[in-house]
Structure formats: structure tokens, C-alpha cells
Length: 118
Image 1: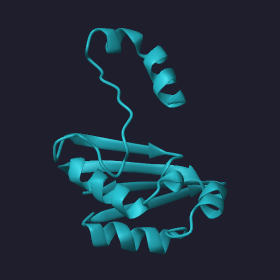
Image 2: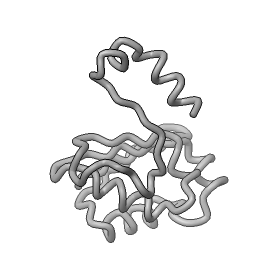
Image 3: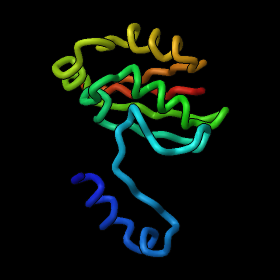
Image 4: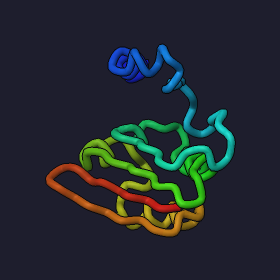
């Protein structure tokens, strides 16, 4: 909710003119049509999802055929908050099982960045 409020304030003009629509939804059950987004970002969030597998499956559903999914977080938050999919290998295996075809990983200090292609 705080992110929604911040995004609304930072993008007032675009929101007011209808160029940008913001909503709060459960990542595991979004109301968007299939193949709606070309780019999806999840920054510092996936470790808090109730069901990461369902969340990733839903993101796959709403991504366009050539879509890109950017997933990034601090590694210590992943280690602390996640029971499953803590490692790059386990998360990559899940994403490939869901149908994502390419997973690229970059690490810098305590941060990890996944660039995931549908």
C-alpha cells in the first residue's frame, strides 16, 4: 500500500490523465488478461509472497510472448525470508519448469538480479 501511495504521488500527472493505471493485487491472482505486459518488475518483493510458485506462474501468464521479467533483491533478505527457492539453482529450476526459457543472473555485493525471458 505504501508503494502504491508513493507511485501515485510520483506519477500524479500520468495517473490523472489515465496514461498510467495503478492497482494493488495479489501476485498469484492478477486480473490482467494473458500476455498483457512486455516487462514485469518484482523488486524486493518475491520473498514475501505467500506462494512463490503461484506468483511466478501468474507472472508467466500475464507476460507477452517475448516478455522480460526483472527480479531483484538483497540476498540476505532472500536467505532470511524464503524457505524454498533460496538458491539461484532452485529458483532457476522452478522458473524453467514453469516455462521461462532463459534466466540470466548478475550479482553485485549483497544484491542479485535475475533477467528472465518468457
